[in-house]
Figure (cartoon, rainbow, N blue to C red):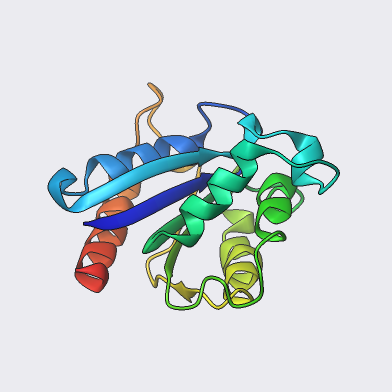
Length: 170
């Protein structure tokens, strides 16, 4: 069984990036994947800033380090990823993600920051030795229907990413 951990970097529950992660996970064959969400908004900010120890943070880091596939999902803040996701990955030892496949997922308000996933999130996880999936996802308002459900383009992006992860990870 493959282990997948999705790291949610939004300070708000129910964010677009979390919705994409949940859709992605729902499309994986359940009998072959052990999945878990690591919601950084639920971890002590003191621990994320290295000011205190926290069991939830330690368990989250251990879960991610033991994963075969990691999803790093975040909204776009100031043209890049959130501080939550940055402070989390700052705690990982050098090369600790070597041999692990990471799928970056980023959401934003417009297409103007579409390259932020390639210029920010992707290099951050590569500095830890990760192999980055080719079919990363950047989504903005245009990809969502008025009822809050993903539009056809977003569904296709998610399907492409799911297929890549399944075919790459076995």
